[in-house]
Length: 423
Image 1 (cartoon, rainbow, N blue to C red):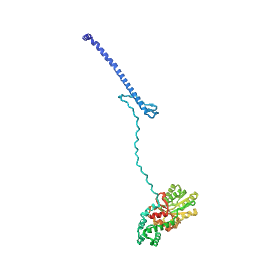
Image 2 (tube, one colour):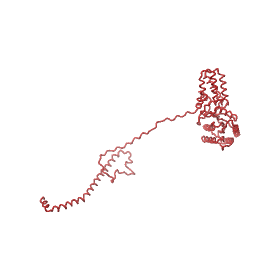
Image 3 (tube, rainbow, N blue to C red):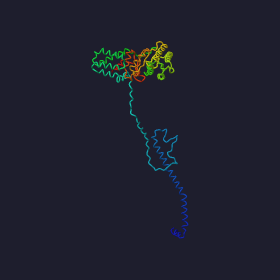
Image 4 (tube, rainbow, N blue to C red):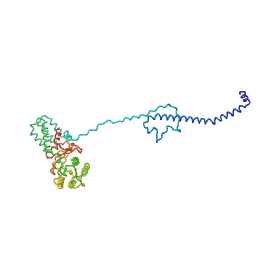
């Protein structure tokens, strides 16, 4: 073989055979190698795909036991399983050891931030006659009077100062003179200022109790109340509060807007009528108030209501023509229903002091006033006016206003008043 190769090299025959053979081999390599390479790659890809699918099946097999809801297996949508891997998106990943996947523990809810508990605001205590007299005791005549009673000696100076304080108490001259006469007559019995205090306390209590009368009961239908008083005393508001009281007693009230000279008064009374769900009889502005009262009485009779509250124009006691008009209203009501009005109540503002006493006197001369309602007692330092009215006019104080709320119109209790005043 070696001799043939050497002979061929010399003759050049080797190149004649070898070169074509080499070229043929190269040609075959060029033709067939890419196909093999491509096939190898596809086989490798298929192999990796098989591995991933197997890993997927193994993973699902390990998760399956910890799934609580068997009816809805994981990775399902519209009744078909979602493949974890799709063939066209397969990528080659390095092999990793698979560990069982622990079920995800539910996250603990974040603590809810709560505001510190706050106790509800304490309710304000109900208004009483005692609370209504606070200003009279602290800023009125009673603060000076109680200070005077601390003296242990009853001498001329004490008596003189006592008289001066009483004259500033809005009781009126007649009432103060009466009290001082009693003090002087019993002076020798007093050993200390406290004795004088107890003596005055009992004299005032005696007057108030003697003239006291409870707010009248409804005994016939309709019982008619004629409400009088000056502007600003709180007459219309008092009528609204009275209507509320009657409704609470199971009665049916009706209101008459007799204050036709002041449009605001008519509207205010209508508002109270809406609040209390009761009828309000009214007429146009400037209408004859006596006509309104007459119509209201007839309406109350026909509708069989329990009580009729007739509002009237606020008038000054020194206006003769207005007082005569009030007399006319009173007379017309009597014609519509004999014996009416059954009650004529004057509403006075405690802030007016002695002037309120004068008002009560003048109204009593025009119409037969049967009782008094004192408003705004809680806002006044002149609570002594109640003593003067009771003594000089002999009229009962039916109710006192000790606050702004609808339930703050309280029955007047003379004993409670005296105890609160001298406490």
